[in-house]
Length: 461
Ligand SMILES: Cc1cc2nc3c(=O)[nH]c(=O)nc-3n(C[C@H](O)[C@H](O)[C@H](O)COP(=O)(O)OP(=O)(O)OC[C@H]3O[C@@H](n4cnc5c(N)ncnc54)[C@H](O)[C@@H]3O)c2cc1C
Image (tube, rainbow, N blue to C red):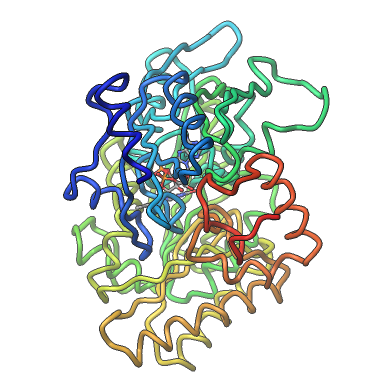
């Protein structure tokens, strides 16, 4: 049996790092999506050599492997299928170096995003990608999903910071791509290919990240609206103006009420929508930019308030980061999609979402990174209510169709994993999927690394 090896390895060369205990395995069988599966074992390597040893053995014996960070993914990417072995990278959590001279941080994949942020701030540096899950997700998971966050509107997403990667291939060989240089065009850009590959091409064991100087000043403001459309129109005005905010987040009334219900953060529950806007940079410039943005908000009847101190700023962000768990107060099951449309088309997309909710008589709560055109669409339902759940599942296709019709995409940051693979063909042509499958086959000819993910069929040949 597949995990006989891992037990044996445990006894001889990997003491204490292999688990086959049933209760422990259960903890590695899910992520933040609705997908579930039970691994046949969990292996927790502590360095690249151990990852390579495990991969080489698994390759030789056809054992499927699933790389896993913190398991906070939204699409089932780290959920094991077909009795796969979970390779947990949690223990590889060292910040190897903060190279201030070259403005590069080198980390192991299990480092929690927020831990790096804190360490960098101590020396006046800044790593912009800030997924709302940053206090618990890993940088390896961020790279594998090309994670974004509120600050992406100004600073971009994970791929814009990855300079180099060390990756263990499914057969155990170690591949080095890029490094500490800010440029490099020798051959195909394999680093970019690995970013966002959802653990299907290789196991990332070391990451070189570009870092920036910490901005001198940040101003955080909230703007509430009596109509959803006014908020959406404000987003379009800001994104086509000369000011680039560092965050431009949106919440509709369902989301605002859910958050207030959950934690009493002081958000106005009667507002139809709100925008959380942040600007950063040199002090004088920031004040001028904040004034320009406030004027744009007020021109569309927005009610603007500015966070006066660090605690008020923190409270606003805590409220924003509480949305995902708070939504479960509405209904016990959440179908969470993260569509993106060209930024100027947000008003049309929000209108389409409202029409879908009305037509299907469903509660759909929307929030997200409006500055990127990225809306997190949450169809709130109950898995045990068969009729409603069926309608909710059907609405996903309508949501994707509406986004694609507006020139958008079905995922901005959560990836495809298990839960979205049946929809991949709605967006990508047969040619695209065929090329991707061929790439998968080059990296993983046996199809044993994170099998069953991303592609509508498991056949990679
Ligand atoms: C409350 C909440 C808020 C969130 N907010 C955001 C957000 O704002 N932006 C955003 O982008 N995402 C967000 N997410 C989704 C999730 O946190 C991100 O996708 C994150 O990058 C996943 O990291 P992880 O360590 O949990 O990875 P996991 O969930 O463990 O794995 C995710 C994928 O990466 C692969 N993987 C993990 N580590 C490695 C590795 N070392 N090598 C190769 N493959 C690997 C796995 O196989 C899997 O396919 C949110 C999730 C939650 C629960």
